Length: 442
Ligand SMILES: Cc1cc2nc3c(=O)[nH]c(=O)nc-3n(C[C@H](O)[C@H](O)[C@H](O)COP(=O)(O)OP(=O)(O)OC[C@H]3O[C@@H](n4cnc5c(N)ncnc54)[C@H](O)[C@@H]3O)c2cc1C
Image (cartoon, rainbow, N blue to C red; front, side, top):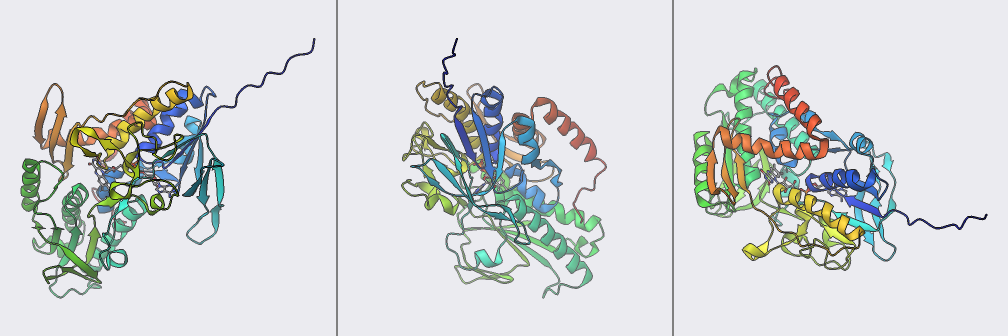
């Protein structure tokens, strides 16, 4: 008897662009829920081959944390059975439902991945954010930034070379001092300053004898606003500033930077500060490509405007989440801030949202639960607030705060690596930190 051929519908193609805090988390979840069962084809795109937990970039940059926590996207995608594609996202052809990728070359300019287009049925943009230089002259040419793992690696190498040159006399400074300047006293700037102080102490203990003198290394933080950590409550900002001063960090608030020149930072009031290494950490904005997407509306910080469902205003099939999305925050009558906590909660929400969309069920609205903010200000310390229905808002600091801060990273690793591998990794990492040098010195 002839068989009637019944066409089985093709599984939907879900493309996630950006393998950061939000994107990698979502790809892992969807591959477990849909990919393994063949209910969807999951593809993750990134311009890098590896993933690093961005909130730790300042520790990698200072050399106080090794790069061994990088997750290979080739290995991760193989283990979790989704597709990984190396490529730089440059646009969308919405009519043909294609994601456009630019070619990626190696450092010798040989092509690694060609220019191409990937078809999608559902597209999720999670391409994070970039430092915002607010058009300040000289920043792009003379400042280092801390947006990507490669920038963190470059900063770590520059820092090491600077201290070596100072020790050997290859670097001549007018006042026999090293001057490190961080512009911006948000979480990134403040945490980096404290980490640089830790690194300077380790350099002094590891052969860079010239920096043993207490005043040999000036670490300064310049902030245009009247206080550090302007986005956090005043009591936390005051505590953090006190801790920074205890670490002999020169905190200058109300200091607006007008321009940067090689070796010098010029303030709007005419003051000129000499600086051997200058890091720009004065806020973020969406990557440029977001503003170049035709037909999409952008909002605060140049981010893609999304509805509470996380769908873009322009297209029901295209979602955005994490730092690149401008998502309404009705409780504060504003937009959600670019933070790991938001990116993580949105990734968890998106898993359920995509399941609903595929099943043809009504979509839900994202609701953010603010669990507080923690700022790490030295090897063992942190300050911050925890928020919850049962506890209200409490301020914590010291060892407990540091543990809570570290737990955010552990929870992220647990969601992308699984409980067993994340726990084993934490135990092995803890053990190896006892025998490893406290600073990366090569
Ligand atoms: C030093 C530092 C400390 C921080 N500390 C904290 C903290 O303590 N608490 C907190 O809540 N938040 C903190 N943050 C902010 C937090 O890291 C971000 O909010 C969070 O990582 C955003 O996640 P995301 O997935 O949106 O973007 P990201 O994690 O930045 O990921 C974006 C991904 O997209 C990729 N990508 C970008 N452009 C393209 C392109 N064109 N094509 C292909 N791929 C692309 C990138 O390679 C990256 O993998 C910190 C940030 C920094 C830099």
